[in-house]
Length: 212
Image 1: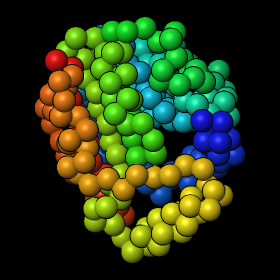
Image 2 (image 1 turned 30 degrees about the vertical axis):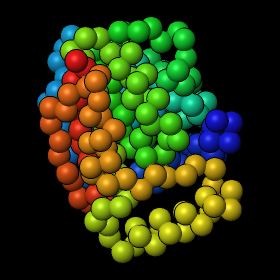
Image 3 (image 1 turned 60 degrees about the vertical axis):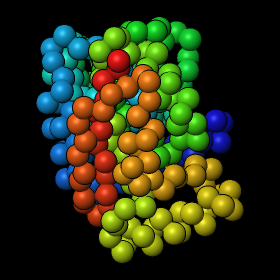
């Protein structure tokens, strides 16, 4: 965890700039998520990074709580919040397994581009089920690195894999196929109610699953 935290801290200041090239897909993802939110929802943004997506969703819901393991990412999010007029956001450096996060506290949990960077996806999905209220929604958008991908992105993933194996980059990216994510969420806790595939330089998979 400490190595991963250090890695995300190190890239925090340039994170938003790096994400700009994926803005078309982020726009689609956020529109998709908004269609499942309402004004009474209390939302957890898991892996919120610098908070940019939480800000864009904030007008749609009652509250959004953003969490991330990176103190530098959360620091940027908090500075943005201080300089804004948004009142229904808060950001905390913590993990999903922090005991202060109470069971059945959230109507919706979102995870945008994070599941593929985790080692313990099964435990994460179990924890998300604990934190959701009965009937709550888990909405994820995940790059699927074994599906269709632009050649330039394939080269980047190849380089990333080398750096990961040598330990230079401490975060190993899982190479999901679409059905891997279907299988991850096809369990006794969730019923998948909607999926959508998006391609922009690489394939991403959106899933909406309801806690049963």
